[in-house]
Image 1 (tube, rainbow, N blue to C red):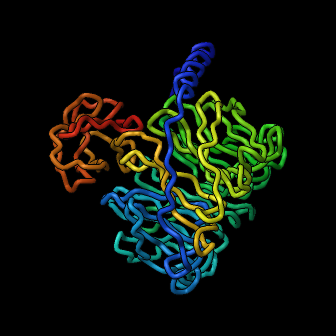
Image 2: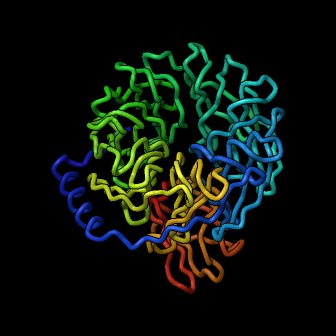
Image 3: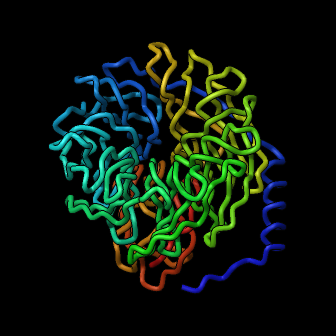
Length: 458
């Protein structure tokens, strides 16, 4: 595929203008601790960001707690009513280090880093009611210790990584069908990366982009890409001065570039935020150092205001981690510094619910010192999103939102589509004939809601 690239001077002007507009005023924010984990309802959510389901609730995992003390799957309302849906154990897998992925079929998919038939971790399916089904048990040859979550791709398959195992013992990238058929896509050798903590994402050009936390030319990790035929290319090897140990998944911005974090390296040694083009040109946007946080484990999301949002696991004003906002040009603002009573050490990143608010988790702190779920309101309005921001003409699409009852119109980049309002939080439709890539809009009695990212017609 031939890609059109914006001339550098135009990109620079665009980023400078966007920085001025978005940095002009940081919305007044309100932080609320919604849930205190107590062991019974779960304990210590780690890397996994929360995910919004079709009913409008949020879903996630904890690495400990529950009936067996080895992890849970939970669901919760946006007001903080939490229900433990499942307790994980040695049979289905335990210690779920990451969060869940929602597939086209409405099922959630996750990984457990240990347990299963061979003791090396599993991929599982879980319903919104909590019924867990093991899809695959790892056996060393196809990898083990699947710390990463899963990412949905154009072909309907889910992609993930294992920290160890594979052909060279340094981890793998794999794909798995919703029915459980697993294929190893790549085995890391160390020189091309090792210890891949996060799943690769599929970009708008169809390629997979991901990170490995260590290995590469300098030993501090890599950013890589994989083509549909399995061809593997290193885009960038970190050398510590530009960051080290990229653990979190990348996010593709609306400008087409990728944004991410490293947990170490940079000017101060406390981690970085970076931008990298699809061709591999990397720019360090920010180097963390104590007062504004350190060790950004959770990666970034792009909010509906165009800014990126993330967390640092450590430091900040109270030495317990922070929530930050950063513009595409690199202007960083600390939005909140955690204290032990409200939760501390947020390992995971954030999710923006379609009501406009951000939600996240902390590993520790709270009333039982077992972690929390929190909400951060930035005054951003409601919007709509699809389960996946892509689809072919005629394919079914589920649109998630808030207060969708009474919707009168759905359009794909201006092309009308027939639809059914399933609930106040979900609409089912199909990509209409003649649709082109762009914004999905839903007209409701309260106003017009737009999608947070452009929908790509395949």
